[in-house]
Length: 346
Ligand code: XUL
Ligand code: MN
Image 1 (cartoon, rainbow, N blue to C red):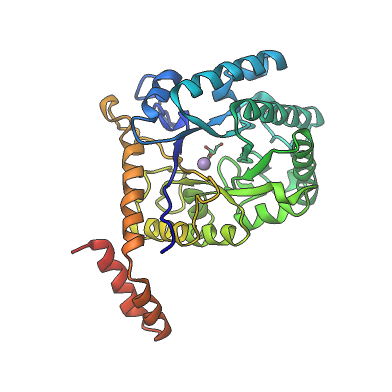
Image 2: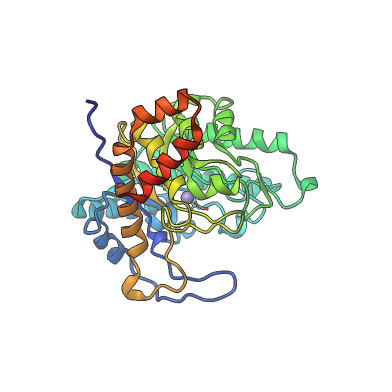
């Protein structure tokens, strides 16, 4: 029998969030980074994911040397806790320089800023001991169709990717597609777009993808199919599991919270394609509900991990032989009920 995968788990400091939304202030006081880090292992997690300014706060006001020194200090802290850095992502959506986008801004000065910041992000990742950069291209898109050229924007994204690939010969870039929010329409809305853009870059082998459940649902797609699509190309280098109730704002609910059967199918897709066998992590990009009290602040992470592991058991005990037989007989009614009964348990 094939060796069973032992999954490695991960979250980011932003996943222990304070509850602010566009309509109201935080509902919990901020916690320190050290507190978040100290909880990670105890909760059964192995690694932390970072935005560049999670790793080096106020990065824009710091010199390259300062950035490197602070990254080295963080590396010592992480080593001390036995926690790995899974990835680093440039936050290209917060600064006044990224109001109109990062790489696709209509202002050349702003585009240069976005690229420079991405290169610093690569430097940080190297110091933290990871070769993985995640690009959520938050503002690379349009609010109105007339403001940018789609073709030019793709050229600009490819130029930026090439500069990043040239900056460090070992770096790998995982594009995290999302179809909308904050933009009306994003230029890289799906995994298919991400992998197509990779083909235009100077070294397509070093560009892959990160799939987030909620982002697939927002694109009207099935997350399990997106997972299998990326894995068909060996391009699923990271994963943000969470949940999403329909076409609304990005909800980042606990994994399995809305659609347990879809969560099961995502886990089954990961299991049968041996996700993690190349060292990839299962990350939960989940947020506490705004109503969450301080004493329950970490439960969304604990629960997402627990649900994932319980669904791994469900995937491993699913009667695949009968499923194949029912499929061959085209008895999908029975297959449907079999999946439901399996999830309901005895
Ligand atoms: C945004 C999102 C980000 C990325 C990291 O929707 O998912 O948190 O995962 O930049
Ligand atoms: Mn995400």
